[in-house]
Image (cartoon, rainbow, N blue to C red; front, side, top):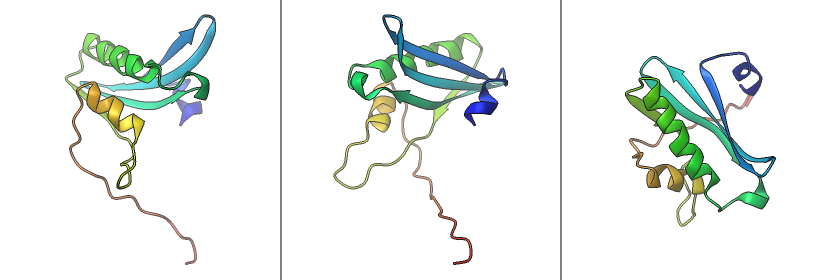
Length: 110
């Protein structure tokens, strides 16, 4: 997915910097009036400093500027009693969970 995104203009890369160092990255995929937030990551040394929240906001503004009407994302669901920062960042930014997707595990030969 990452290799394909470098040559596909529908993927828009974003980064958060600390001085001259990239400390967090994320992609925005734009397809017509829908944009998808995907592939965010932050260096462990820079987590809990708001980089992903800033990248969510920046990608949302870009989606609006390109004419998107829908902004979607998917992330893991925390297990009972656990905290999942990605989900929390998306909810704090104004996105609302719509459903929990069923995940399947492929077991070849089993």
